[in-house]
Amino acid sequence: MAVDDFRLPKSRAANERLHALIPGGAHTYAKGDDQYPEGLAPVISHGRGAHVWDVDGNRYVEYGSGLRSVSLGHAHPRVVEAVRHELDRGSNFVRPSVLELEAAERFLATVPTAEMVKFAKNGSDVTTAAVRLARAATGRTLVAVCADHPFFSVDDWFIGTTPMDAGIPAAITDLTVAFPYGDLSATEELLTRHRDEIACLILEPAGHTEPPPGYLAGLRELADRHGCLLVFDEMITGLRWSEAGAQGLYGVVPDLSTFGKALGNGFAVSALAGRRDLMELGGLRGDGDRVFLLSTTHGAETHALAAAMAVQTTYVEEGITARLHALGEQLAAGVREASAGMGTDKHVVVRGRASNLVFATLDATGQPSQEYRTLFLRQLLAGGVLAPSFVVSSALTEADIAHTVDAVAAACAVYRKALDAGDPTPWLGGRPVKPVFRRRA
Image (cartoon, rainbow, N blue to C red; front, side, top):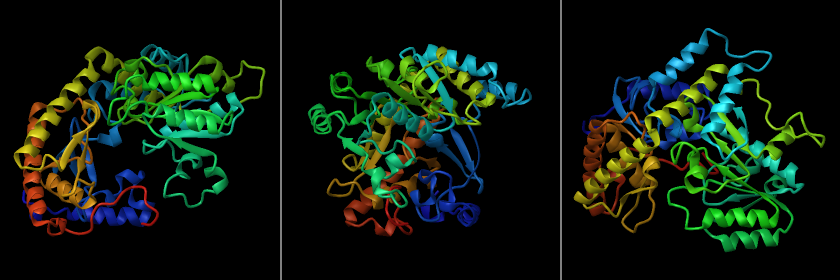
């Protein structure tokens, strides 16, 4: 469909109602309609496998499903069946369900580098719990976050470091310092400058590039030498890098790690895992000062834990991580070929591990451009592809990838016209998309 003929009247009306009732019009800023071309932010009706349908009746091949949480595809049969089995058995009790024991055993069998685990509902809760535990264990105040990774928590210790720091006292923000990814000497300088003050180094162990050789092992040595904890945020790398996360793939064991997203295939479940001596600081078997680690009313809902167990079983038995990599490699090759064919290969660039692909939209000078991203997204949407990223799910078929590559080729043809014209404005259809972290709306 030509983009000028692509209209979403029901989605537009629903977005207006969403903004009237929900601040930001969505429950996650990354899902906001400001992340999409003006008037072309679909409101989803339902999904199955790698496809979603909007309230206007359009079907899309979807990428980055549920902000990377739906890696098996929507309504995956094994996950749905596991959840359905628990729904008429009760979801929350006054004492632990036996599923809490079974889910912990399954998780620790899948991630054998951890000795204990505690479940919650979202990534922010478990990363903040890791930070609290690190401060309690070390008696130190400062937290060192990797400056090259975009998000760790909605809580003050991290959000205070972003442009959206309204409402967060500087006294809290000052307790967070930053180190660059891949630079051991800069990290050692930071640890030396704040000698005996930094409680932990927290980072995503891998991102859009592979860790430099020896880097993660070097961080492990630095943390040990300077007496702080090493915390891996495995929200994205968990399962997508290997069933045991990046720590399982690269063979470097953190003191604590956090999992979520793919763990529940869209159901709300996250996990804090790590060394027994650290985790027990939040337990009932120690004799020191207690850490209020995680205490969530809904953290152990039976259907969510059943979903997590089904996801881990499916990954192991069906080789899902390998399938994600194969699909991602096929998609990346197709997109690169399509972009090169239209002469935009220096401007529409696919990056990242095959199981976690993103794309960059660069202007004529090679700089990231929100305007060109807007143009690209408009064309993809009109072509039936919903792709804030190119993060794959295992439900994709070869036909889905072929369809996506065709849509990319059509989008790159328009991209080339805009580059030749020296101005993408005529192809934007309104205001450009905006970055999530910005000071003003």
